[in-house]
Length: 91
Image 1 (cartoon, helix red, strand yellow):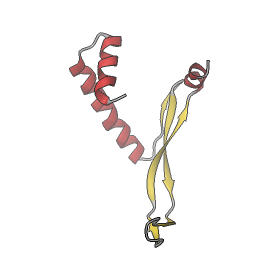
Image 2: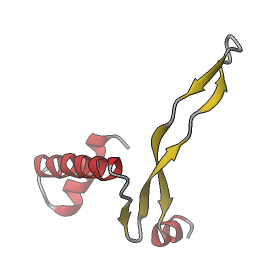
Image 3: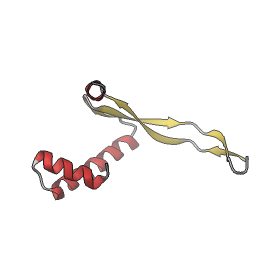
Image 4: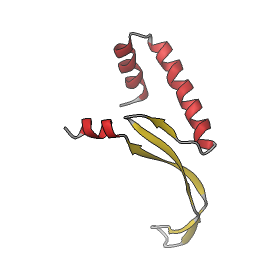
């Protein structure tokens, strides 16, 4: 599902305009990004949790040349599915 499809589906489900849904989605993305940068998890009860995860630097190999390169330390995001979403997907 693309962003435009998501906006259209939420607008149809909620009765809000696509413009309002787009603004809310943009605000959610901004707030979520800032929270994750500050290492705060985002918990959507029943749906899931977005948790910031620090990955240490590690060696990797370029498959084309075989050269060993170091992947620097970085911050990534882990999604843990919530109980209700998991149960609903596996009915």
